[in-house]
Image (cartoon, rainbow, N blue to C red; front, top):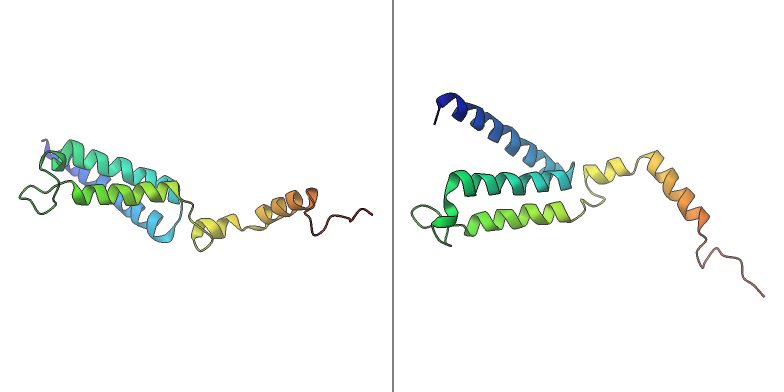
Length: 119
């Protein structure tokens, strides 16, 4: 492999892994980070790693796909599940504009407790 291409790929991998750490660790742009993690680890293991052809167990001489599958499940579930209210995504979603939209939707549809009682 060309040394220049290898250097560019190393820098790109470092940027991707750093953005994954911020995305998953701080829960900022969580779904995009989870999807990026799945794509990144699939490319890293299928194209460059060779773990899929080594067997299941990770402690084989060339490594196996057990640990890779665990990482893919973690990032896949992170991409599927919402970040929650204790995250930067949840905090950014709780801005006054989104609260106003939520309250206007809630006020337009009265629930059973606030609906007038018919007699």
